[in-house]
Image (tube, rainbow, N blue to C red):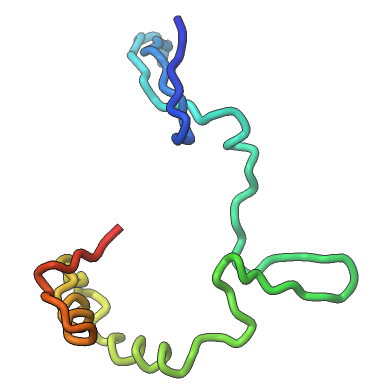
Amino acid sequence: MSSSRCSHCLYESSPVTRFESAGDPSPSSAPTPKPGILDIEAYVPGESALAGSVKPIKLSSNETPLGPSPAAIAAMQACATSLELYPDGGSNALREAIAQRYGLNADRIVCGA
């Protein structure tokens, strides 16, 4: 049986196979990572090394040697007493702020991934 592969996915899909677990055959359709995916080392924040005593700064990882800005610290502290609440899934305050700043209709602004 052949497997199909999506060129933009990290996994290949393969036909359902069977395996034995405690003597009870069960179907398995778990995705199989593409070759090499599991060989990629996990990202470790703040850890980098170069020869010598130079400490590299990982700008590509959005890290900074300066620490958080005072404005970011103040914003986090202002929200610290309500961290148990879920954020507004509709991003209403953000959409309103963008709309006001740029003179747009907030109903026509979409936020999300």
